[in-house]
Image (cartoon, rainbow over all chains, first blue to last red; front, side, top):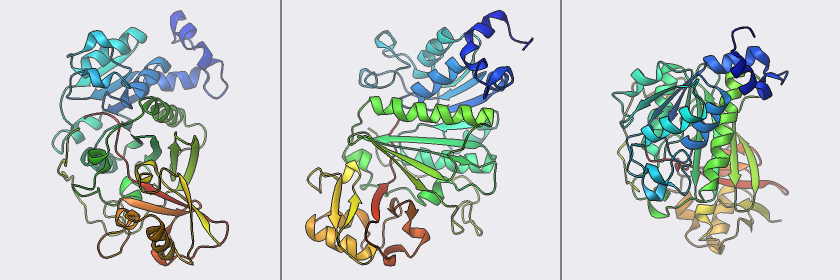
Length: 268
Length: 94
């Protein structure tokens, strides 16, 4: 406890008082390094709550600037931020919330060429990307780098959350769940775009919760379980994710031995 | 006896906005044929031109993925809940 300042003891008092966290757990949170893929709908609640919780280093990648159509759900950004790079707006919002924080920003697209160099510095990767090529790239890279990946996705009124513990051989990966991305023309996000903004909050906060539990080593991990959130009927459902022995990435005879780029089939 | 099938929101346009529909069949493959009769167009969203279930669509009986059972030949019994869960990729623009 002695290594906390008085201000930190006060700031994190509601954590420290929890027996499951305590001073020791709070220290783990303060020393943790997490990487957020995207400073958008999911990245906003993820980064905000992890910053509030005191996660020491938060890396965020996003190449875009803040657009008016983002503000319906991307709560890292506000109306005065229009036109500003999202990562800069994110940095300002997060450091205003918690000055203890080290925010590392990457104003670029995630690619086969840069992802391994970036994620090597982090303990946990949180995927909030809006497209399948990035989602498969993040999964494959996290697998090769043996990083915990907490995956969240939203679409219309639906959300999905799960954890892939790529640091464990027993963990399934995203390709065990869905072996391949949909081909061009069948991508629903191109044909039937739209999302109820608040769902990004529900799913992102679940991702942030799981990140804190992985940092603390507390509770039951979401590994091997997919949570499906149907906001329209307000139902949470859970299904099992098995490690697929025939998985092209993490199976017994893997076909994918290096990172590959899928073509981006559309931009919203 | 019909079983309940959960329909994800992207496919509810085909099921007249119903999130849960009844279908009859002895196997998952039979259920899909029955659903196609009631809701034409649903099958092509679930299966490719060879009839195989698409690789970005999962079908679960209760909590279990049919790919880890007998796929379309997996038998269905009274009281089972069937869920169709497609891959989704919304979030932010990276």
